[in-house]
Length: 252
Ligand code: PGA
Image (cartoon, rainbow, N blue to C red; front, side, top):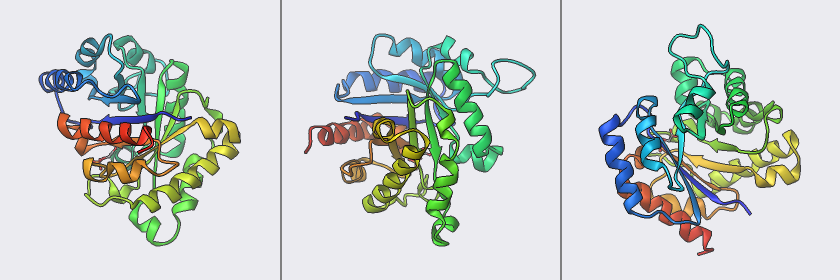
């Protein structure tokens, strides 16, 4: 039985002051114990977030990690540096990293491997562009993006299916489109690991997920949670999505 995971990806939003205010607000909502919740502030806000989240069940993620433990890599941060700060998770291979910073499947896999070696749980992002979807290459892209994931540990691995055309656009995959892609990705994970292990790996949907569409997306059998950008920046909307996941977890 897979537990829902609702992860907020803050991207380049919220310095220390806003991070404190958000986390104090989120803790006050007393998120459902039936749902795993993770927030992902920018690097500079991680220590503040870690301090405020001490003793709570809310997990802390970084948004990137380097594939080496140390070295001459100006501007990069290693897995051990993140765990030292109290991060337990890291987002890897987000489409914005792929589009703006040259991330490839290979570098994403290397980062994920290093993160696991440092003891971090990984949210590994995949997803097709609009052009790829419109030219019927969605499955081919998802297959190649998941190829080689078998070299990672299945433990603590979460995959986020984020169609690039739905990220930050207000255009959401329909629940059926999401389910179709998630079921396909689960098949890829079966080949990479095994049927039993693939059953246990959570596949999150990301791309304009918000309170108004959370329930219908999370009701799909292979949608195990969400990676949320815009709607995770506001305590009210983020907690409304957590509540929608709790309702789905209760089978309603
Ligand atoms: P969005 O972003 O919810 O703003 O579309 C999702 C993501 O990029 O993870």
